[in-house]
Amino acid sequence: MNPIISIKGRFLKFISKRKTRPVPQIQSPKFILLMHQSIGDMIVFSSLIREIKSGYKNPSIQVIASKKNIDIAKQNPYIDKVFLYENKWSKLFPLLLNLRSINFHYAIELEAKVVTRVILMLKIISPQCILSVSKREGRYGLKPQDVLPYDYYTNENLNHQSDTSLDILRLINIKVTDKSYDFFYSGKHRARAKLFFSKFDNQKTIALNLAGSSNTRRFLDSDVEKILVGLRQISDNLTIILLHEPKDIAFINQFINEENSTYVVASYPTISIMDVGALIDNVNLLITPDTSLVHIACALEVPLLAIYANDMETFDAWHPKSKCSQVIFSDYFDSLNNLNITSIINKSIELIKL
Image 1 (tube, rainbow, N blue to C red):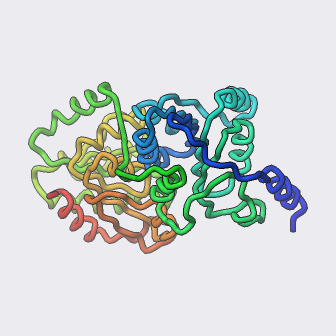
Image 2: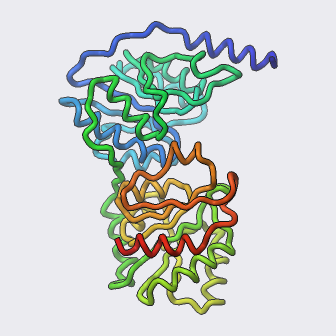
Image 3: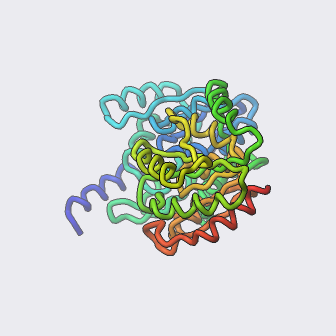
């Protein structure tokens, strides 16, 4: 074994030693949730927050959020206070000491794998009881079952991250009443979307998301062209709105000019994820790769066609939780190449009539 890995592994096991403490019997408990991951995580775990809020008389729910998802947390009426996660210990440590002084009854940790930094964070915060989702991955050559630093864990046989997070409620004797997601945005974002969509009165609208962080989450330009041409056949009374990054503008303009297209438009500049959510809330259908927009559409109950790479482990953990969604897979594990365009068009026709 690599000696450095061995040293880190021993350190991890050392800081993970603890005696399991009983679940506090408190009518109005204080919770701290570590949710400094992605945008999608904040949405998928939103049902957990809401159910905790309704499961107690007057709980205090406080959240550590990242720069990516803090706007979503701030708009959530079930969250009482939001703290910004800082990656540098010089900024993070004072925050953790402040949280330690609050004397939380519960901390909830939602990482799917063992993360040393998170363990250290919770050591400093020192809540009365730590609840965690079961771990899929260990660390430094250690298996998840070799590193159990928290008090209670969820059922390890659950697949979807939403179901796994909601199983935390079982640990504190709260019955799940509603598994749906939440996504809230302000009147400012609503007004901006309303003004944009006023141009498309009496038209069906489809949002096609071009943005993606990797090959497994981004369409080929040639496939986008085929999808746009195919969608045009659905109806003459149809506008396709392209959700995009700045680097996509040249491609969009080229397509519009070459096709002399009047049915394809670029979305207005989306300054934040709240802008994107407000836009999605107004379309008749969203077509997107595997991004946080999948979960936003589920929360807003917008018809959804989600396109995934052929990675079933990821899909099982994060697939759409919506009755008005359908899914198409690429032939490849690591890309969206070789998509079945005909299937995309046919499923779009089914969904837009919902």
